[in-house]
Image 1 (cartoon, rainbow, N blue to C red):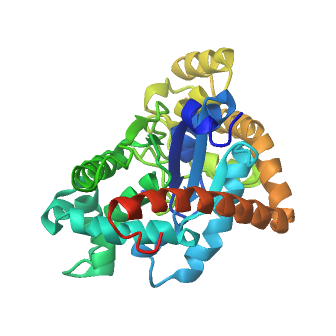
Image 2: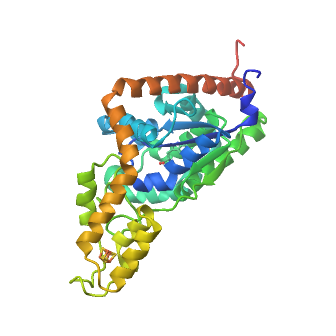
Image 3: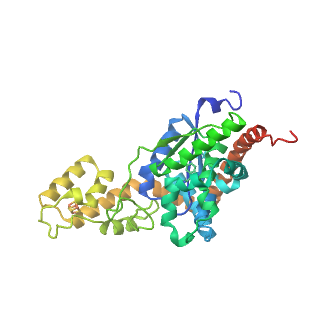
Length: 343
Ligand code: TRP
Ligand code: SF4
């Protein structure tokens, strides 16, 4: 096969996460599972970025946190089945081409348009403590840098959550503007909404999150899982075992539906409604099933925790490979922008 041929056969996929914390089962069902499936189908050429530059836009005062979580995130990916032989994992800050593109794109987007971006708007409102009355230039502009992330790699598909939709839309606008001025160079990406479902927290909150303290992490030990499940919100009307219960309003039943077998789920619901099931036993059984489900992930993660040099090697090689792709795009961009002075 001619070098570069596969580029035309496989769709290029670009996605990633901010390295601000370990991943939990919400991330797993929401996006990771799907990424691994896409990878294993063999139909895509996938790049996954660890968005440390973007993480700094609201963690600029906490560089240690970002640095530490780059490796945590990489280990979570690897543990879930992201295979560095098939998928390129890279570190955003080590791709200067993306930073360069961000600068060029900043001419193609107005401040008013950024301020109207619904995702950015919501986040700014949530970050009053960090930003006070006036948001930083970097944070307001992160959609521009995200557009550069995607287009540096000529990403055609971006599998991600609903909350990212306004960011991908903004990227598409920038691409159209660029192409209309400088010529058809950039690829307009499409979002692929991960069909994965959104997992509620142990407390019944719609969102599972670190700051909410209601998450089960992929790296949690069996003891940690058990402890967390024991504190999950159950049907509040049930006090004694023979009180008739309602599994529809119980988080333990909700998780049984994700982690237990069909027969177990049916038994849980029937016994609960009939007042024939103790909540403690019900929780213990759930904790066991979750722990069993996550065991291969946990063990694989442990292996990488014990071999940090391997994780570094994967990140280094992934980034090196990504850099070549980025340089290739940059050459085309600079030529189109008439910045190829001595070529
Ligand atoms: N904004 C994404 C998040 O918070 C992370 C991200 C950065 C990203 N650059 C990207 C996702 C490019 C998809 C494509 O999760
Ligand atoms: Fe929930 Fe199980 Fe208790 Fe029913 S028995 S309320 S499903 S924990």
